[in-house]
Length: 536
Image (cartoon, rainbow, N blue to C red):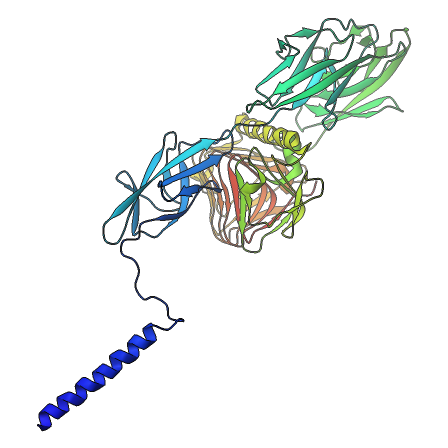
């Protein structure tokens, strides 16, 4: 009996313990201690910063990306309740694995209990609404474009026959018409006796119409209105009738060809008639350009060419892309406490692809602001004139990339096999057929305030954690161009200088900082990044 009673006490105490634990498990504040072994959902999905629309019942995901996005190697970021995800036989890792989305891609999510669910991901590339005329000229006379009013005014020399003028222009639309007549730049002639309306049609079939007004200069018109040599614009002092042009160090000035526009009927140097973009002159000494008006009066402009003492190649002309500290085609995102000084822009992506900045729309809806940005933020879907301006900026960025990539007369090729860590680099044109690495040893660029560096990098640029790009001798960030055909990655606490022209992603890890510009043909991602535009 004693033994039986002892077991009874033990049994009774056990029962009390089980009852107590059951009561605790039923508390409203308790958390589950087990997961559903059959869970196999994709709960979030995005590509290039664009969130996918998940239809859970149909097991489909739809993602719309900006026009021009290359869908052949996109990396998805996703979250899942399953234990693994695969595409075909290829295991997937969020934010790492790339896939070709030319056709639908099936993601198979496998649960802990080995059951599975398949999601079909469809990627659609949006049509572009860009429909701007960004440059326009008639017979060498440059048009003045008022984007807001959609007007273009051109002043041609007195006596010009305006009945069959051929326009040279650039447009962001798919095609351009005058009435029912298709237009081709530098080919199609029109009668400008009255105003002519150019209709630009975008890829999405939206349209914009520009009214071109041509005015003949007065009989006494004899001004040089624009003047440039080797793509460098001259500074015109109309009061003093002087023009100055500063060219790069090493430029041979004995046979330079000028590009100019004038309100006069003829231009001569001495007794030699001048034709814009054709006639060469020796600028060892100042050259006098004599402009004759229709009434035979004349004006003489004295042109002085100054050769800079700067070393290295000519700088890369960023055009309007140089108005932005960050410019991207598909997305700009940030996490952490980022601080940006300068303007941010995306196009053809919409403002929804700018994430992490808590955008505050301006009353004009032409731009937005953010507590993280000392400057303005622009996107392709903001109000006029932003869409056209952004299209121009993106085009200028791509032109700048092509310019930097195409430079020849290389000073240094495959230097240090791409590892420039710990080196001191002088001004010049550098070329690598590989990637370039900068470790924590950093790199130093030593040169003067006007000296230029161009780095042509065929693959990735990798800047390791805590790496510093140091400038000596007055070297300036605005004159340093990193042309990267792969992606550029700046490590944690890295300190970078220069203009980054990347064909793909520019990624800043936590605490990285940069003085320069991040211009990417895909996306820019920031993480507690300090980004400051260079001093002009």
